[in-house]
Length: 162
Image 1 (cartoon, helix red, strand yellow):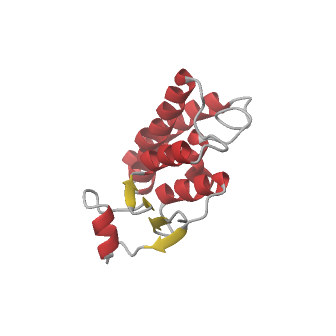
Image 2: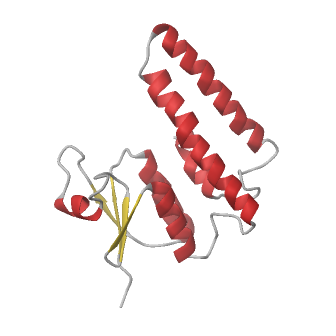
Image 3: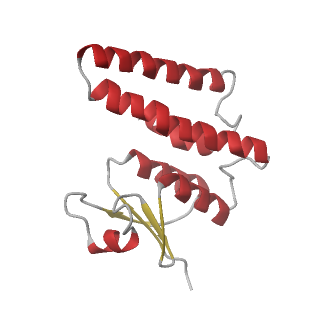
């Protein structure tokens, strides 16, 4: 029996793009189901009843939600071209920088720079630049965060390049 893989997403979701990129790197075929978040499908609500949001990856009828959880699932299920390093410390560092990207960088840029005005926006820009400098320092001298091969952190932070 052939594997069934469906990705519920929106065209604009930065979090869903991580999954699209990971599946492409792994060479895994899947079906895309685009969702309208103002009119969520019964399938999305069934597969992600807790958060009711995208992305959701459904593999042989089993749903997985939350982009970092999905990325790790993909990496563990399709082992070719690993996204996470083999070394436990390096894996932990990859998870750290990915979480830093969401918790600090994304938050300061979206909620601070784009949604605030005046002095608050200026302060948010300074904060965002400080966070981006941490990433710049971590990437210094490397092609990708993991070295010579694209990996987990690169996918987590890929939205910065879009």
